[in-house]
Amino acid sequence: MNIIDAIILGIIQGLTEFLPVSSSGHLELGKAILGDNSVPEESLLFTVVLHFATALSTIVIFRKDILSLIKGALQFKWNEDLQFIFKIGISMIPAVVVGLFFEEQLEALFSGNILLVGCMLIVTAVLLYFADKAKDTNKKVSFANAFVIGVSQAIAMLPGISRSGATISTSVLLGNDKTKAARFSFLMVVPLIFGKIAKDVLSGDISMESQNFTALSIGFVAAFVAGLFACTWMIALVKKSKLSYFAMYCAIVGIIAIAVALMN
Picture 1: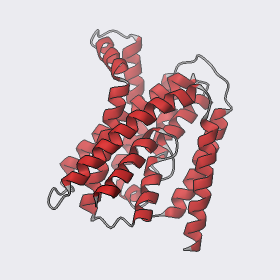
Picture 2: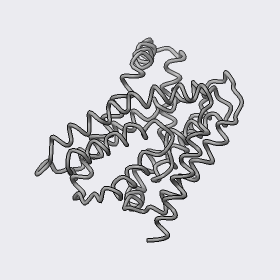
Picture 3: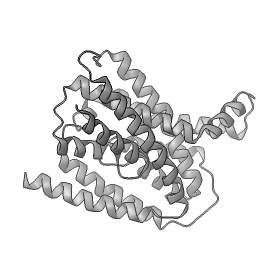
Picture 4: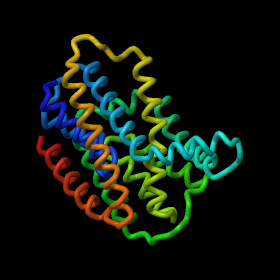
């Protein structure tokens, strides 16, 4: 993989991890457009590096929230911070189950299946459209809500379903405050990302031989910087109920992807 491709894919990952347009779907489309012929080990390592970059950008943006949660948890009381941590734990259950028991079936879908990506982008567009029409509330995410949002996160493991779009939309449609929904959506994925990174590293499937570490480093920086921008922007957009723009974007890209897949 050359440096230009690394920058492009890094920016795509950084932007689409937070913006509700599906990072996995866009990476599949990006690889198809760029003609990515990386061997599996190289592609896996690059994906791990990009996900680490976006997880790190989330930690930077929400550093005050994370420190507050840690301090609250260390009080060993059933306070709001500890309850929030438990809700995140509950939300992780569906994705962990899917990742552990259906990993091979899931990975089989990440093989340039542009038709699937296009169809799932349409689904994302529908979710965003209805979420954008939801009324504003002050409701916090409940324990039951956390599990339902977790189911959405597990479904969003399909290429083309936006994780942030699915989880934020589900939370908002359940009647939760939009800002709280975005905060929960971004924080709930951090443990999963680090867990997946640890699993990939310990699996032994990643080869460090013949790697272009310059491209990896540049891709990391591109994803990190783009992630900082996208995360901050997305929080502001959710507050202002601007998700309909992304619904239109996902619908257009989805239709184009479907058309290209059918023509080929």
